[in-house]
View 1 (cartoon, rainbow over the protein chains, first blue to last red):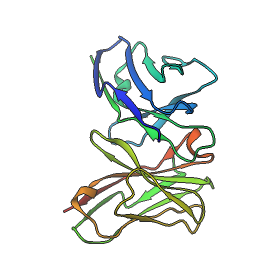
View 2: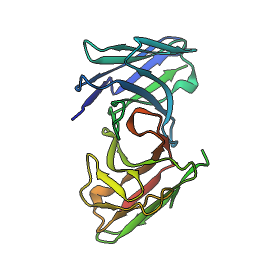
View 3: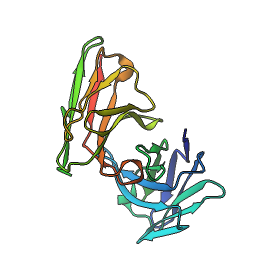
View 4: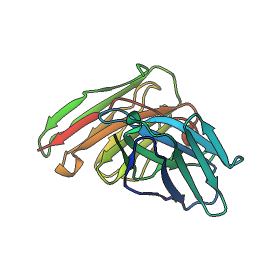
Length: 112
Length: 113
């Protein structure tokens, strides 16, 4: 079955700098890759997703890139702000599949 | 998201007791999921359901039972709680399974003494 590895587990960056979180997946058939953000004490919420027919997707300060050959995808946050502090989860699934597999999460802290 | 709710939000129980966590969604989503969240393990799938009366095991199903008699409800039962089941439990729903956005409930923090 699918396995998703995420790193780093913790990341601290200066406010205004960029942050990058990376994930690798094992099942080459996977074609849907979402990212969820979980603020402290809150529920996870989808912030961006990408499907395998595109290599990059942007939404304001966040972007996700996908390399299907290498089976890895990354979340990029530019101009980080205090409200970006949270745990971020990557995940992988296959169109038509019933479930999704999550990575173990990255705790991002933004230093003032 | 008022569309998916969980109850109770907090629960303390003792080893060996039966506990049921409730999940209710108002979107008529076909798929519902139960995850547990533990430090260092992220979100691990316990059970999921593709429709009423259809359930299947996830990564960590041992010690848990689910049912889905109605589309909107997906209760999770711990038949005989153990300390290792102390965790935060999230219910989620989706209208198209794995390759679509999942909407999470607010979570239930369960402590087993």
